Amino acid sequence: MRRAKISVIGAGNIGGECARSIAMKELGDVVLVDIPYQDDARKNLHMPKGKALDLACCGPVEKFDAKITGTFDYADTAGSDVVVITAGLPRKPGMSRDDLVKVNSGIVKSVSENVKKYSPDATVIVVSNPLDAMVYVAWKVTGFPAHRVMGQAGALDVARYKTFLAWELGVSVEDIQGLLLGGHGDDMVPLPARTSVNGIPITELLPAEKINACVERAKAGGGEVVKLMGTSAWYAPSAGTVEMVEAIVRDKKRVIACAGYCEDEFGVAPGQKGKGYFVGVPCVLGAKGVEKIITFKMDATEQKFMEESISHVKELVAVVKQLNPELA
Ligand code: APR
Image 1 (cartoon, protein in one colour):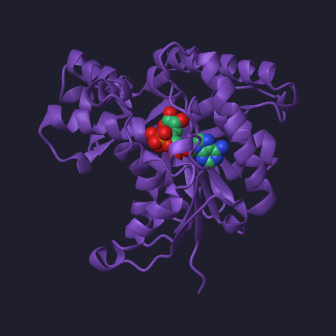
Image 2 (image 1 turned 30 degrees about the horizontal axis):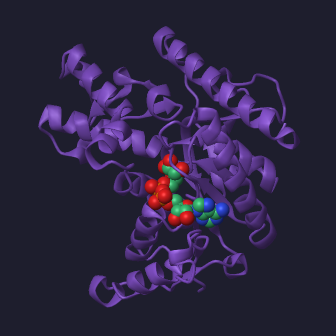
């Protein structure tokens, strides 16, 4: 049987760790794509090839059989089953959010054109920020059906939320069940009343201020890491991404919070056929991509957070459309 082919575009911190974890779990063969260094001193180097070589040599120790290739050439990605897009720049000092949208939408556009050309049947997971807008770019440029395009944010935010709750409760991280919806980070929609320790609501186990502290820490989790390391996180973002890759490649029907395409769902864009948005929602992930979005009736507080989150996603996408009228 043919192994799945998984291309990871952007062989930086998140891309490299995704490749390692995909290989360790033997989810398929990995193609790592990046661009040549732009400075004269390093222009003759080949970072993705070097990273792939280093990773491949973990195989005998970690006991995985996976082919790992590093390349500058999208032809090597041809026929990928899954493409993970991590290409992009982090926000630099003095850069506005709109500047970042401009730079990264240009990058995600060029990457998506190559995904469309070389892997027309792929399922695409976008990781590049600002996430909810970059998924929209990938969807528009590839023209893929919406169920084959999604963004990774919720898997990471939920992982952070569960970690802080488990620490607070003194229980295993494995025994926390819960979701967060909406946009990435600040825009997330907490659902404490629907979070439990093996079915026991956390609202019965912790006072509201302790739960709120965990929610706030999860919201600011990315920033906390940046303050400590001077650069953004990559282990947990990769773990969240590979959780999604695994659900797709192994057709697991996992329910994972991801940026999935919504119209009527959660009142994102009711009745607006083809004019929806990608928002963090509970998605059933399997071989076909987002096979279903699970909806439920929110209470008034949850709905209020969701509406705020949706309006921020719409603002970001409006910036994308203004900068790239062809994507409107
Ligand atoms: N094609 C392919 N790769 C590209 C392109 C491009 N057009 N432009 C940039 N890259 C590569 C960079 O060369 C770099 O190796 O993307 C990689 C990004 O890696 P890092 O800078 O290490 O960033 P990382 O921490 O991995 O984050 C990647 O995910 O969470 C988001 O905000 C984060 O947008 C960022 C992305």
